[in-house]
Length: 322
Image (cartoon, rainbow, N blue to C red; front, top):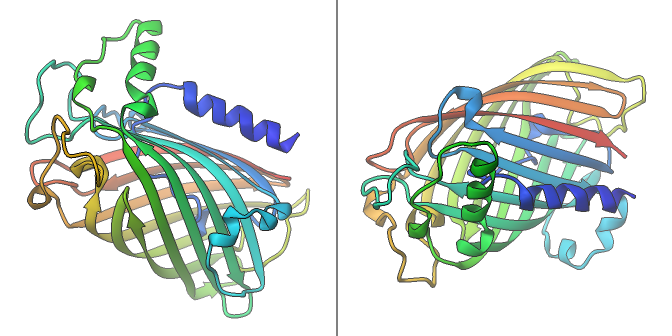
């Protein structure tokens, strides 16, 4: 039954409107679910911030089950031997547009059209004694026309009587999408389950992006403690707000520069046009009761390329413990 739920969400991912999203990261400490089995569905869109450029929409679906520790792909995930470990699989569709989809010409000095369709395997391991956690994620898929973003957006815009998107003929060409990502978080200060200050860092290497990141997270309220290692009770509830700040140093970004093997892209940005240091700020509220988890958030980030500008977006998330 649970695999059928996951398959249904995956189909939604593949048949929804063009998913123009930043990479959705659910291994973040403020999104912790205290159960080794859960199904989670995330939706992000910049209409939450009344904009329509760069990051327009994103969808992610993931499933964790105790039995997944036996899957071969999850054995490729390196992690320390902490108190508890959660293994999961997911599907994500990311994509990007320039500041306008009304032109049949290449918009130079703007963001290229691009889309990425990726499956992911991940492990989240928690040290309940020393209040630290480590996550590893392996991504595998494709960047380019095969992700189907052009056809999806044209179909949805037609059904909604919106303008016909223009410019997708200039999107980044098909190429391999393969990435390995790690993240470490350590609780710095806490007071019961009312407030928590957490610091961390990580990195990603591969054909989608290569970068280094450092971050700080503050949570306040009746917190779903990410270091308790306990499964939620059906009567257990939590409600808390969080804010997360991170600084990323970018070495490579395929959605701006093109894939590693395709050399005939209609339009990409050069390495000299990429902004190396990017800061972002995210704040949200999470509510849970029993096995149901809900989240709403807003996010803002600095420009990703020299002629670009800051961008904001928002999103919602729903999850159920299994």
